[in-house]
Image (cartoon, rainbow, N blue to C red; front, top):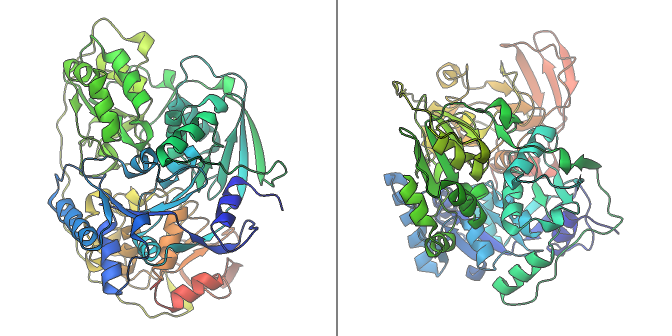
Length: 602
């Protein structure tokens, strides 16, 4: 039977010769990793459940979210993982390695056709080399450490054909921002995407990584590039043996095929607030900035560093503007040193930090303050993700040009005299809220007061902000629920045990953090009802035995804020008890019901 790339990789790692969309199968995982974010909870699950590690040669820790150890809780968490690994002979990609997903490709541990999971929501970066990569919650990763397998639902696949010639000076970041402009955050939600085209065959590894890494922001399971000759040669050299790629069959079945004119793409930026809020850079030009950031798993590669250095050479960062540069791996950092790029960066006035995630993670350089305007090469600009200021997303060359100009611009429009920065007063917001943990029964029919939040794309930073990620005790989490969601900052104070939250599309987009599920459990919220969920969030909720229900439409329910509804997990029926109207949502799958009745994955 013909299969797509994702279907072939999953079949190759299962007991089946053929799989199709919707199948739920156990997948053998070639590489299982946990980061300094999420890793301590993985250790906690293993130790509390007396679980052993199946194969230490396939098991790793990667310390990339806060390699500087600048936060005390992160330092403690790293030591927990380090000690656990030391006692079992598990390899640690410690603070001197950089971003784990990149380092694993560099070392030839992940290559075309392999399978990989970690606590990083951008694990789907592995699609850049034609491998299967998934970010998962700490329960999933603990089970992967223990069993070497995880259950997975085979996704539907779509094909994107990028036709036409690539415009001159169009970066890979511009390409993915154009794709985000076309597809948004949820039209490809939970699909596997394969990208083809004559020009895409020429994409370098660095360019493929940039595009694949932002599949998460598009809501996809993964963006897969069929490996070209250069990728195969690179991966074979790193792995120390000849690698044969996994390619889709010519007659593979795709849910949809999109033919897109690459020649129509233009340089773009994402406006603050959402990665898919992209516009032609012309619309944002001359926006005054306070800071710039070059790095992240999306744009911390060698080609990105060279693009920035080419513009910064012989120039200075504008007065009052700050530039922070963070290569993605130590190998790239060393290469920057060897090629003289570090000298260029330092002479321009930039801060260069050791390799790692940087701005996307709460602890390392790249965060900004309230009122600060940043232009960044990161992959996310959700409110609060890279700090409390505003973040525009752009390519490395745009960031470099902008910090020299003092405002957002392109390399060919840098002024002779930079715009002068006048700082504004920054007011810090402090909060101190607390709710006791509420422990629920496990009924299959629940009734509760509705919080009807009429929003799409509520991401995990809005649900549970990254500044609280070091919290591991569930009873401490409830107080921070939704405190980064506009108009619902006081949700935790007003929520009552037994409430039910109803939202729209793509709830829980973004990070792999388990806390975005557990915070609702801590408040005693009985269930979330949504039209769709972020893929990792859906898994985390199911694995934590927290009820999530998916509806196709709320029409017919005539739902209003404060109504009382009844939800039947086994039948999917939702009844508005105030007006007796009802709709049919999706019932729990056998897997979801089994885990729910078991009280969780363990």
